[in-house]
Structures are given as structure tokens and as C-alpha cells.
Image 1 (cartoon, rainbow, N blue to C red):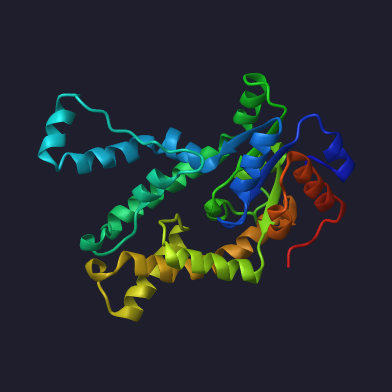
Image 2 (tube, rainbow, N blue to C red):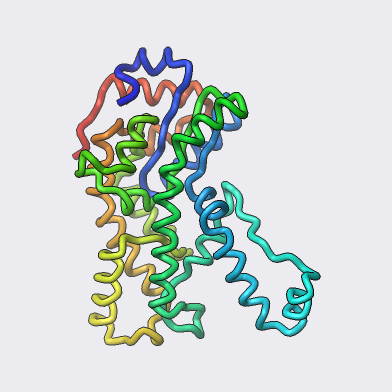
Length: 289
């Protein structure tokens, strides 16, 4: 790890961390707190994916829909209107909407082949965005004058790295440039995340092998075909499986850094609070269960 002790961390002129874990446990809360209350640059992986690497895909998809409307088609064809994505750190809806859900087109579902294409696009974009972390650390310091840096990753980071491989290129690059911090939730958090997702199911990126297995298992168990699958029902069914699938992958990643609890993170109100939480984690490193 780039900080060998709690004192090393406290004394560091440049504090560089990468937050990972399930979506909804506080990564963006911490990142926003650091950006607003301290000299921290906030690098959002999902924002980078949705702007630098998938921005054209997202905009083209919106234009494709607009071209179905004669009034908008004429304006687009004459360059009279502009259609773009207004993605922000706190509103990633353009990215998730583009990813979509497979199933019945009458219910907003995508053909499974198109869905898988968009999943592959996301995988490529996420890997590239993660590898952009080190250049952004330099950019944040040299161009904007930020001493400290927080990388806010998406919940799917564990799907694009192999933390059990000591030579994994992404894990190596990230751990050499940041302190990797797992925000670990409890069983209660997991239950609440499932309830929250059930109320508002959202598109997600999944590891391809996991997704294909889930899709075929769901079709077999329900007796449905591709065009009769309710998109929301499928992603709800898949979500709980995905959390269980991701847990050991997060645990493997945690061996490259430190672990903090979601409870501790929820109490962070200032940059100083965060420094204390990380110092405690470095003083009392825990081996993930």
C-alpha cells in the first residue's frame, strides 16, 4: 500500500484514495463531502464512462429515438436542434438508461443481443476509465492545484478486475497510485439495498459469464422467451444474485488496501472525519471475512 501506517497517511502531502463497494453505501457521499469541504479532486468513474467513452453512444441513442418523430427528424436533419447528454456526478441516468434492460420491447426492453453489445461497450469504457486514474491524479495536481484525490468507482469495478491475480494490470495500476478502500456493508445494508432496488430497478453492468448464466437460468425457470420477459422483473431477480456474486470479488480486492464499514462512512461530515476513518483502518487492518 502507498501509505504504510496511520501516521504516514496523516503526514502525506498528497492523499490519494480509491473507494469501492456496492452502490448505495456511501462512495459518492464521501466524494462529495471531500470535494465540498477540503482540497480534494473528485474523479468519478461513472461520469468518465458516460462522458469520455460512452457519450457518443448515449447521444446517438437519443437521436435515434428522436428520428422516429417527424417534427424532430426534420430539425435534426437540418442541424436546427442539438441533442446531448446532461450527465452529472449526481445524475447518471443517461448512462443507465442507455445500458437498458433486456426483454419485452412493449415494456421498454432491449433485444438481448443489443443489450449484450451495450454491456460490452460499458466494460471497455469502465476498464479505460479506471486506467485513466493515474493521469487524472497528475492532472488534478499539476493543472488545477489539488493536493488530494478521491476516485469514486462504480459498483461494477469488481466485475472488470481479477483481484486474485497479483499481476492484474488494473489492480496493479490502481494500488500503485491510490489507497484502495473497501466500503463494506452489513447484511442489514444488503437487505436495504435489495428493497431499494425492488422499488426502483435500474440497469447495471454485469460480468458477461454471470449475466449469460442468469439470463438462461431465468428463461429456463420461467418458461419465457426473450420477447416475453418483463425487463424490470428480470433485473430485480438478477440483483440479489449479483450482490452475492460480487461479495467475494470485493473481498479479494480489499486485500490490496483497507476496509472501512458503511456505518463509519455514514458518520463522515468533513474531510478531517474521513482522514480519521482511514487512519483507524490503517492502525487496525482487518482481513475480510
